[in-house]
Image: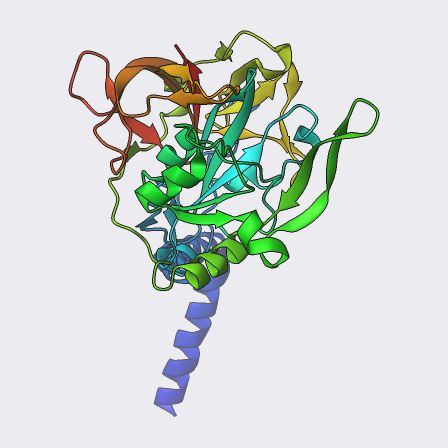
Length: 386
């Protein structure tokens, strides 16, 4: 009886205490709950790919600050330096890079697909001031790439940096010419993926590029990374694996406050035609460069968005006529020369160096032996003839 009275008295006192201090108790309990839930969330985020919300919010002038990546990305793609998760990296770790010739005639630009997903792009004059691209794909699966165009010797030399499967539709073939791609391919053991050899199983016909009232300028051919990897392994069994090639150095993007507000990079190759004069414009928020050519935005038709690059390089190389009675050119792609590198909204005077066809072209601060570190992502190299 006495015990029951004591328990009843204690319970009554506890109830009065709760009523008297209910506000403080509620706030304490809420604080403990938030602290425990927040700590648990941060701890488990790295294991379950949970996003971390930015408590600082955003402003009108600055981008949202990402405090943590939504998933663990520790595997570095060797060409672009981009981080991938272990699962994402499975799609490229067992594959050889792909180097694909892309048409850049002004009439072919409405048919550009897949360029934004490349890891590295070279642009150089093919003939008459008209440029073509060599787009190197490796880190992403791309369902549609093109329009694929014909080969030239100097583009092959850049494919040999990795060395990549080299995809194209025919090419310069003047007998006895130093620009003859077939002689060059045989002499250098190029892993050649020619549309003339592979046909419709690897390259899909997409129509014709027409000019002057219906004349055929070129045929449109598209391909994909899966088709090219499959064709490469079929033609050269055992070769579809990641080669051991030298890597560039990479770094983190500059903090927002240290980036330039604006920057424009106008450039040209021969000075004509006007349609092949280009310009890159810096975007501070994304820390990337937006591409223009011929005064218009350059779009990837796969996304309908303007092409962009994290790094832009103007590399000056000696070019000469092939001397075969055609308009074919030859570039000196080994040795060294001047370059300008643009990243983080700043310009860096540089020197490119490449000791042999089997080595990578690398870039150094001009007048020093300090190798330049690039931002992670697509790099676009404009090869300016001198």
